[in-house]
Image (cartoon, rainbow, N blue to C red; front, side, top):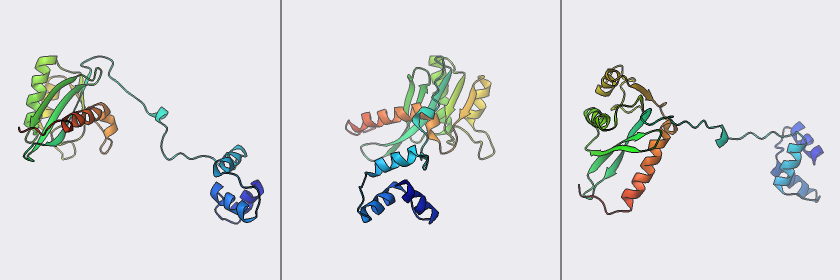
Length: 193
């Protein structure tokens, strides 16, 4: 089998476990499973596995050390009973995963983000930082300006953090909350208002 692998490789042909298994069948030799062939090739140092994804153990999990150290925010789209679209704005404490605020808007605007944020700060005290995606209600950094939320945070001494575009895992806790929230909403009759 190892000789067959080396010959196929020298001939610049596919030399994977399935191909080797096929050749063994054609020569009416003892046929092994592809997983056994793979193990033999790996043990002989002829193949090195190349995982397509990073193993979960390589993910760096982070969590704020104290309550009010960091808040996460995002919103979801939802339909009412009459198919009217609404957006549900959530603020979540990163350390405790406590849902600090949940409010519905048509639609979520920059002014709504600021007013709900300030009301939440008045109730729970200010966070040291916030973590959001790059939605225009949270940041205007890609359009060359600053929005109302970006003006309020420095006035309160709060650091603004934004996840990388197209990388929602950074805001994983709020994204996970959205799954639970949507499951809860789907299990009930659609709201009228």
